[in-house]
Length: 162
Image (cartoon, rainbow, N blue to C red):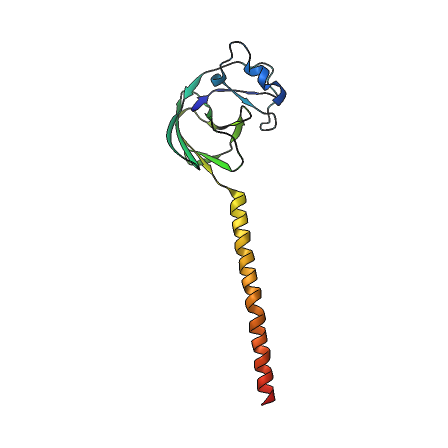
């Protein structure tokens, strides 16, 4: 479900299926990344390297916590679907999530033992909720404002007729 991989390769989308079918290539041994997500040029040759399993510590629908331990720096890969709205931290520091193999989630991790947390933060939902509250407050203000100004006008008219 989760692992740490040392090697990465930049592979264009049209070549990923062919690369995954390379004889002797261990998919756990190399992280395939899109040229759109990294600054490196596409890899000329793809080969496997070392990898280590990661331990799943906890999981809820909007949070996954892993523990990684490897003798090498690399990427922690979580075999859950990559989707906009997920954020990650490594030992409490924010890290950018990369779409691993064009479909999964990966974050860079240094060598050693580390705590990796993936958390879903639905920013669109938060923005829409704030917008809804702002609209409700505006509507309430518009409903109350005319009454208070009408009351003031009637009061002025009543006091001037006396």
